Length: 609
Image (cartoon, rainbow, N blue to C red; front, top):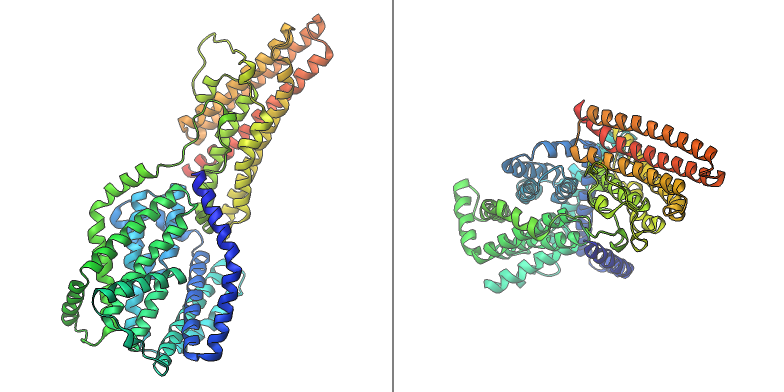
């Protein structure tokens, strides 16, 4: 997984270096188009407004729904047919399969939905995109959309200036719809004006050469614009103006769907395994559907003609027939793929298993630790952001216990399984010098990277937060800080432990053995609490029981030091070292318990309420 993340970062950095050149070339091209060819300029301006409108629409729905869209998704995916229906209906309403797919990836990454549900939503989103073609074919190419879009833009600007999230979201939705309408109107005008310059229909290509050529054009257009919706709108506008042959338009519609596989592939680079599993399912669906559709394209065209006659669609109503073809094409994909979803899930899980912690005995031999659950898609949605952060806190807590156990020179058998109860009378041995690990090095190798990823993730959140979500983020910050402070206290404790763990003075050596024993008891108790998944009240009771035992240990340890000072077994210098390290151990305990309460106990009590 680390290799994939590094490859993703490298690809993004290389693309970033090319971006200024691409922007400069695009700017020169736009200026030349506006100066020389007004029709082409209108066409490209229409595409730009359409893409901008989709961006506003996506942002508006995120802000408008707050956490509601995420909760609807989680509640509507317990069956495959529900997931399929949710993907279809939500994409039809939002008119953005990319937004629904991003939501899906985020929820899958957070463990809120299953891979089966995610596949159902993505498959349904493909069917939901067909509603846009019907809407434009039925209304958009017959009505002056600019007249409808302009008042929507005015209302959208007024609403967006409101500070309340719902009003601002409503304004962004209205702006998005208005820009979509203006973009479609400009695309229509651009293709109409191009007829005076040259006739694209003269370049129609018949036979399989035309099918492959225009399918490739559909792929390229979708990759360039990162939107199959935009490609389909261009295809409909060109078909309505007579600039595109009907048979070529069918192939181009297939290519538009096929082009989204490239988009999914790019999005999967550097994503976590959940995102890659879903991207693989999406790519397989589109590849298989496109391959079958292109191979039987004449038969599908005949079926469209038959259904059109039965539905009362005129033979020359090519835009409506294209919308019907687009729907049949995606229904074909569902018929082909739905029976194989269980098998597909098993194959994807086997080929792309979830991330797992390394199993090396020694922390120093493991690769540098980074966040396991934080995904860029989850940043866009508050509920998923909170969920993955809580999962990452669990990862940080487990790693922190491992580092603390190594700092206390606890045996490797305990570090591999902290839930195991020590045998009665089991003596805590001291590992050989070669097996003792440096706590400061382990902190930089395993703790700092995870903590930095958590801080970076929170700092780049791009979504509206409800009060309870803001509180949850504050809790995450505090819990992560507590875990880091616990590890730092262990670093300080190891400074004296390193010197005195094998001291020739029995009282000093025994004092540090007792501190290590108490540390083992603390770490084991917490590991068992998390492993048992107790209810909030039971978890609190177990924590209270440990706290009583810790108070007894502290009292007995301090009394023992007083007696050893009076008897001369320890001098003042040695006694103060033990007192300081006792307080470091208590600080470790306090921070670990505070983080545990924030991560597990409070969440369990909230869920029970």
